[in-house]
Image (cartoon, rainbow, N blue to C red; front, side, top):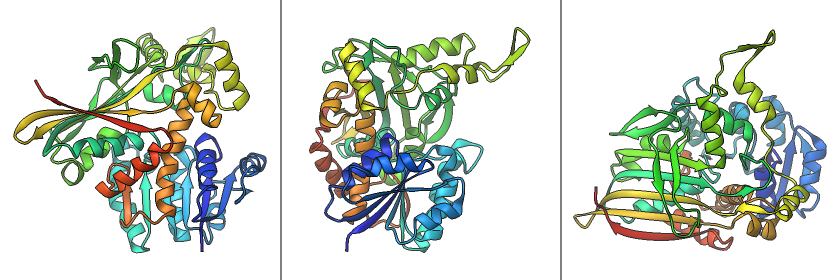
Length: 410
């Protein structure tokens, strides 16, 4: 009998997973769930195996009822709802997948990671189920790519994950993903792993410059940015990253530069200021006016027709370590369709394509019984066999790897 999947949230990520799973022979039924019933039904309408239902994710019992008899809950909801979904999934006794690490289990973000591994992990193991978290593009795809890069080394000292969003249209679109989340992240200090310890880093600080030949963008400036990957790798440095000491996440692009200017001028502050007798919190004002990321097919088509400034970018992993007694750099590039090609293939933006497809490949692993781990694992904890399966499937979507091995000169 085929698998039954409950997808909570029918935005770009959830809808992409639903579309991909509709093609899977091992999937019998897809339940598209959203707070807005019309939205859920719209996501299910073009699919053969799907139905749309209303679920109030702020009500745990509503999720539990929807999850009765399913084999997997795919959580594509905002981070603030994750705790309810985790608890409801456990109560329903099924498997779990999400796209990023929650912020709602503990006040300090890094504590959320520990709780996923050490608190929720044993709970899922006790019911013989698996929870895989942080499975989008970054985190997610980039984490699996980092595991693949480290395979080329005997020991690893440093990993740098780099994402440069080079897609720029003639419209003002600073972020092609959730702008509210982006603005919040931009206002925070970053995280890094140094000498095996988690540290905070200055937002937009510790900049690096790279000029990768395939981008056509010239020298790209990237700096520190609050992201999951350094924390994930630090937690798993000895088990999955060959004794890793240091890990960094670097981000760049038009949105990065715009946000850097805002932060330096005080617009990402939480301290209220008086504006003609009205208290205004600068970052909340910015969140209210930043334009949404394009989502609908007609809008994306209009943007492409208006013309693009650039349609490129990079997702690159640099892994520094020792191979056969020599200092070695593994430079791994994730090659994926740009905006025009993503739209031609699927009617999606490049960001929606790589994130939704990245997550859907983890879902495909679930429905085809490729996970034998129990408990909670993050996307950087796949086995070598699982990594190979992931990228074999990714290649079918024109998401491929370019691995360059070089001598490392400090």
